[in-house]
Length: 402
Image (cartoon, rainbow, N blue to C red; front, side):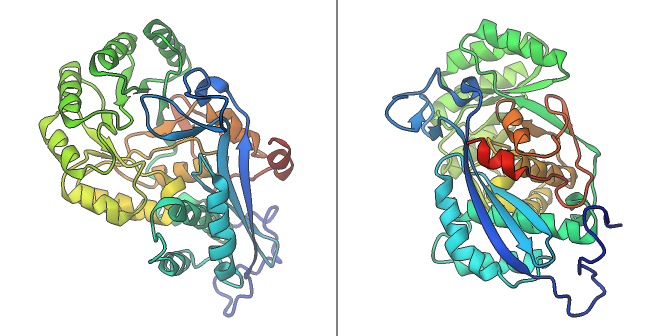
């Protein structure tokens, strides 16, 4: 039943009331750039740190920010109910903001927010010639979609995972993402610290050369943790095969993003040659991209990020992965509390879901903008149980924290 303390009876959300008058009346965007732990932001390893807010962290090729950047979207209805969404926008959140403000919000005004999938279809169809389901366009769509699911859950008085068909688990198992200290001795010590806090698994952010990566793997695996490797697209096929074969011999958990993210053929050849599962997905944003990779057997573990896909598309991706007997371990990047909650709902609603990514650096920042913090982290997350996403944003903290 609906929580009447939060959503009073005067709200006109009844699904039995013909001609329901509740409509979307406002869409507000909040591009955020929040300070956090410089260790997790890579201040010690970045290239040209004083020339721009954005920088490189060799050997990785992607652009990084000196703050935690994201885009929040608030959708308000004429009865006062609000839904929150968030895009994964670690650089340039103003770009996704412009897409929401100029292209998506005008179409949402006056619409029934409960019609999440019809609205998703309409919004994605608007831009088939302008980016459709990729790039910043997809990120903007994801934020809107998450906010609509939040509203739909509040309308029904149910958590989002219930609307998705029910949760397969009440707690979501996690792994620790990254050990951001400079030496293998320090990484092993940090891994032991996480073990003391309930963690059992870790993903190392590597790609610094095959021999160096293996030395780091060995140092951390010696602590007893289950270890995965994220190579951040650093290798060509020959070196990825060398690394992967060595990880096979060590019983590694999985090898993430070993080759250039557009190289489907290379990943197919690599996946066929290795015992260690090849994990792919954070650069992909829709079911059509995943369908190609799955059909080609170019991945063994699918990693969609709900901040890039939205909830609607994430569930579609999970169904396609299921049809190919591939498990889904949702990726989670540097998003804040709204997208983290959305990811947990999706993770709970997928049957073959072995683990969810826990980002230690962003987590305190993620909770800083919430009225009630999410609980858990190193070993598992509690599943939000309140209607919608189960989180509320503190507007004051959100605006004052930049």
